[in-house]
Image (cartoon, rainbow, N blue to C red; front, side, top):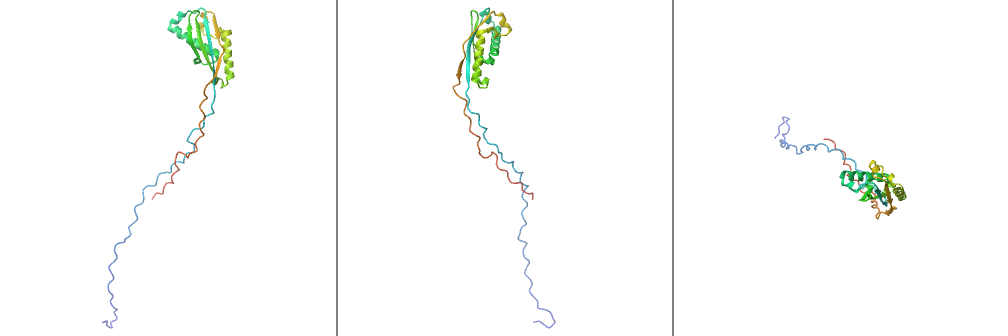
Length: 205
């Protein structure tokens, strides 16, 4: 029982304190930022531009021979003489015909008053693809061989072989059997070869 001393009623003690906080701290920040963005995608097409349209070409072959009155066939037994003769002959004929030396082919060197049988190849591609210019050039060479063969050969050695005779047949013109390859297709329009750029780098923690 309480008395009249003025003291209040005693209250029971409070409960025990709560446990440690339950929330954990946040995890550590993530790693370093990602790398820089990739390059922008390419824009060029993946195939090359188309080739030009097919073209045709033609060629003319001149068959001819030239003889040397004072040249003995035995001179060609000397390999050095044979090589020098052939080289000078091809060079002079090529210069007179207006072609490369590899367009001149020596077919045979026959005994007697030594006679050289040969051919000369004229190609329209050497005349901007114009066969008429090629044929005119070949015809002019034929005329020179027939009318003034000694003017064809200018190397010093040929002046010691006596009178030079010549005969050439009219050029034979042939159109090549097949055109060049057909043009390729237009460039493709497929997507560029590189991928789109990545996102910008992330921000550091």
